[in-house]
Image (cartoon, rainbow, N blue to C red; front, side):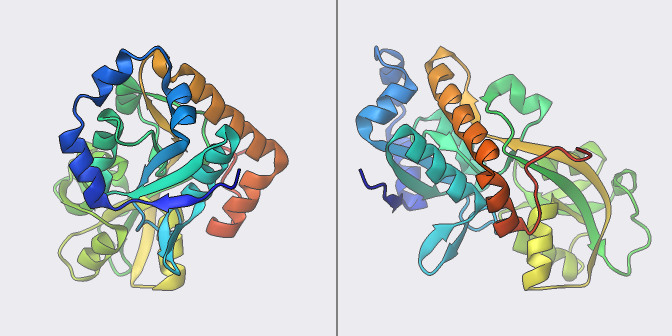
Length: 267
């Protein structure tokens, strides 16, 4: 069967979240588990931002990127069509909770807080969260210097949490471009972002920025906790293992990031 990628608008997802509050209870009463329902529907519904290069972004009228390629591999492994829904970061988990999407594949960092709420797949990418300031800023040289300073980051993101944990006043925005534009214009003192996406931004746009501190992170795919997802988690992990063993995941990493980010740092 030929696998096609559907593109669903954020507006459709928003309507679905409002109108489908009963989906979870309906699914809970079903005799089939989540993976079985995906196979029955013939579609894997994946939520991602769609404007976070190189993870997911628009090119020639299509959403492409590292996360899109991983999502397609999972859909192919299951034997279903891929349906991609571009969604703002702070709505992605709402869609997962409301069962309007099956998976969030959006460079989700695994944190202790998130592990309390969600189960996670095996890691499929290793990255760094970097602290970014203007190149002439000599006051902020580490995360510890953020106390009382201002930063801009995506609402509910790991990067917002890091800033707040160090005492920064964090302004919530939607995109990496917005955070760097605010930093450039002197609206904030710093921003914290994915090293992979920041390096890609610098290659494309450049700017008067530098990184002054970093912390290692790893990314995986979140699932609603409970036995309903056990077989789906196993299927996703099997796909990740195949991509690693075949070298395909490394190939994708080199294509989109310019380096191999499929292994923990130091290995």
